[in-house]
Length: 53
Image (cartoon, rainbow, N blue to C red; front, side, top):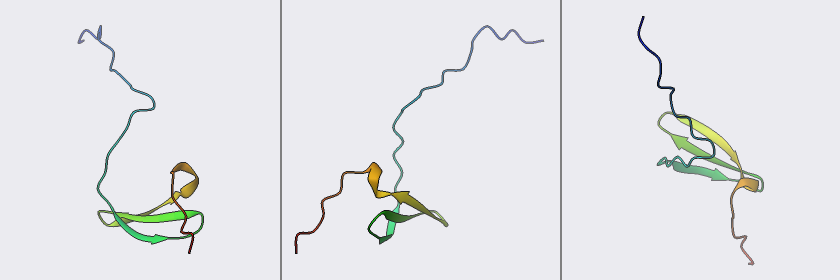
């Protein structure tokens, strides 16, 4: 058997950067396309400026 003295490093709260196309923005969600998938993200997790018009 192989010696498993080294454990894998796992980082919590790390940042991942992905390029995506924003498909739609609603009051409480953003819909982005990454590859062939469209993912819904809550706007509460992001600092977004609201239009004052």
